[in-house]
Structures are given as structure tokens and as C-alpha cells.
Amino acid sequence: MAFFSKFFSKEKKETLDKGLEKTKTGFFEKVKRAAMGRSQVDEDFLDELEEVFVTSDMGIDTSLKIIDMLKERVARDKYVGMNELHNLLYEEMTRLLCDGKEGESGEDFRLPDGVRRPYVILVVGVNGVGKTTTIGKLAHQYKDAGYKVVLGAADTYRAAAIEQLEEWARRSGVALVKQKEGSDPASVAFDTLQSAVRQNADVVIIDTAGRLHNKIGLMDELSKIKRVMQRVVPEAPNEVLLVLDGSTGQNAFEQTRQFSAATQVTGLAITKLDGTAKGGVVIGISDQFQIPVRYIGLGEGITDLQVFNKREFVESLFNHNNN
Image (cartoon, rainbow, N blue to C red; front, side, top):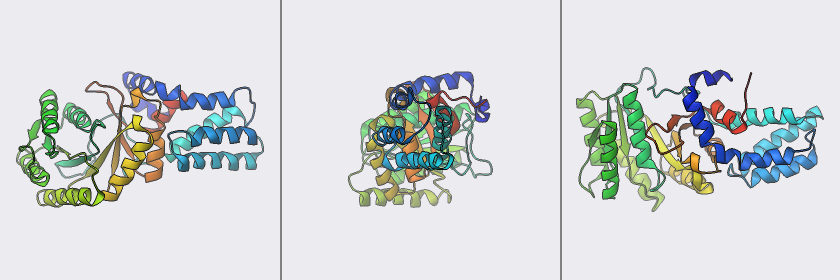
């Protein structure tokens, strides 16, 4: 097993493998079929492989990076066998996944060392991607790791969003700060941080409205939330986490583009990977926008949100084993 596999329990590795099954039998199966019956990588195969990659959910830019790498390797070495192709693709896809400040993560939900408490996570994303569910699962995992957690219901434009978050707070056994529907989101964020400081909380997770009506309005709203939070916690937010639905493929790229234009997204949570063959979107978005993936959602259960480990992810896609 690869070095980073030691961080993963057997149960979580099985969840990852099962969650990525549709992706493995989709795009990655096409790669295997293209290689079938061939002993080496040649120009004809690379042309076929390029078509498979370009029509994949990794996006054109990332796909061409991979193909160009293979072409350079073939031109240099003259002979590249199919077993070597497997390893080259594995290493290149792993390399293209952006590392965060902390490098690669293990499986534990742990706060970075030396960071002032509370650690503030501002969660953004459009409606329907699993944003509120991701917040609830994060709250549960951080509480389970021994942290005191406070949630802030700053998506005040939908009563259902507040009710959803309230239910997740109850299920996770964490505190929730809310106001009535239609309240100023920045006011909710301010109250949440004040409450968290009074309670000596370790983690604050704040929900925001899932709207992309126009970039200027979104930018203004998120900027206001940040300014108001910084009156209480100058470093806030420590993380701006964009939640994306992995099953939407190219739509997830566009959402990343729009939110990145409106605010400084520092991490990604990609949900619903267990129900889609479009798991390659994880690699493409992280590479093209140079944003690290923090978490992936692999099921409906409260513990089915995993801290992302890029080597484990690509190993699972390829059933790769680095002995």
C-alpha cells in the first residue's frame, strides 16, 4: 500500500473505493479499453486517448496537460509500455491535484496547529449542491474529533435553509446561531462569532446564501460578511470553502469560476461522488483553479464526508497499489 494509505482505515478506504465505482467503470474504463490489445503507447493510441480525455469531465486544459506529458515521454523514451502508462497517468493525475498550505491530509478532522480559536469556515455554493448537508457533516466530524463547534445560519433568504441547518445542529449536538428569515446575513455572522468567542468554541462554520444572481451582488455580500466577522475575529475567515456537486460535471467548473471571481476560495468540498461517473471533475477543477480539495462526499450518512487525500483518491480510481 502506498505511503499515504497508512492514514486511512480499512473502512474508509472501502467507502472511497465503493464511492468512486461509477467513475472507475465510466471514464477510466474507456482508458482501459483504448489500451486493450496494445503492447506500447504509440501515436495512434495517443490520438485515441486524447479524444477520451478531452470528452471527459476533467476539462480540456487538464486533459491536454496529461496528453502532452505522455507525448513528451514517448518522444523522449521512444518506447513506453502499457504498464508504464498506468504509472505515468497515476503520477500525473496525482501531481495535478493542487496541494493546500498543509500539504496532504490524513483522515482526521484536525485544525491546523498554532491557529487562533475559533477557526472560522465560511461556506459558499449554489443551492442544491449539498452545502447545508456538508456543513452538518463537518460539524459532526469536528465535534467527534473533540472540538466545540458553533454553526451560523447566514443563508437567511430561504426559511428552509435555516430549518435544515437547525436540524443538522440538533443531529450533531452543536450550537446554532440564527435570526429570522430575511435578516442581514452579515448580522448573523457577527452574532455567530460573538457567541463562539463567549463559548470558547474551537470551530465556527457559517452557511451563506446559494445565489449566483450576479457577481457584483455576491461579491458585495461576501465582502460585507468578511468585514463584519473580522471585527470579532481579525483572521476570519480562515477558510472559504466552496461546495460543488460532483455529478454536475462542467457546471461545477462554471460555479468555481464565478465564486472565485467573487471571493478568495481557499478550499473545495465535492459532494455526491458516489452517485456519478464524473469523478474526474475533482482533478480538473483543482488543477485549473489551483484550489485544494479539502473534503469529498461519498454517501448520505453523517460520517460519509472524508478528508481528501489525493494519493488515496487516484489510487482508488486506478485500483493502483504502490508496493
